[in-house]
Image (cartoon, rainbow, N blue to C red; front, side):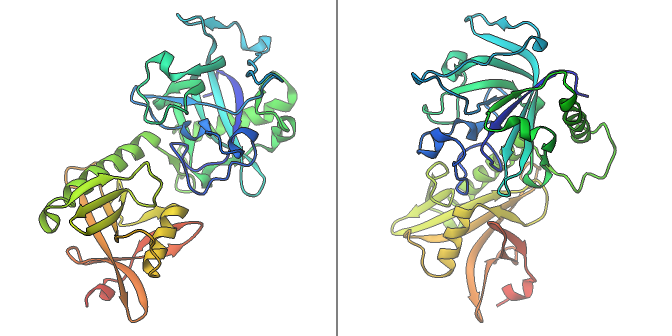
Length: 354
């Protein structure tokens, strides 16, 4: 249950908070809206040291120096680390963001967190980072096992305190009557997701960030091997994961190039979700408008963390006016079901028999 003091940090709305997301518009905060790095995009990315490092876009003085957090007395006494940095710990950091319907919702939290009163640099903590130097600062840190990111459909409104937040980017939760309803809701939600209440969990699905990253990494590694052997012997595979091109890998052999989008699954279902940018590339290839020189492929690896993962290698097929994706070896077809982005779902395999 919730025993720590709570502080609220407001960020932009994102799905994963573990890197750039093509369908995010940074319009609520001045600094990222001008094209500057939005440091909070990595708030739930598990670092190599097993911690998450969080940032919120806080206020600046007139001379462009960042303001410090000024904790009220209810948070107790601060402490200092061996470098003289002042912090409060342990706290529960609640991350909130405004969704597309203009509703403020809780997107996740850090428990047992350390919150610094000033911005900190990763380089001062010897953190081996996954991301570029311009994303250099953070305000809070917690072990990944104490961090919980909620999937978009699982996020819940914070109407009890939304009026108090206004345009502020952080908010202190004190022993006030108007905070009690919010704290009670938060306790219930945390208890729910931590398994203290045995309810039907199918309605709410929290994102296990660390596991998802392992699944994705295992899928990428398996795909790299697949596209350099067997039918693809002689191809050289290079990663395009960080280049925002709408696919993950390129396999090149002479004048032939494959543009491969890789999706990992922990279970056996042959499904995948695609970002808006990925879907645009897939749709462009289906429609004959693919601007990149190459053949687009969809690779789905199921049970990626099991002893015998299954790789599906899909090529685009147009049959009698119907476009779908077919893996000949596994006799498996998928089509794209358009939602906010796109999801690949199984098709009746009769379409793949030709």
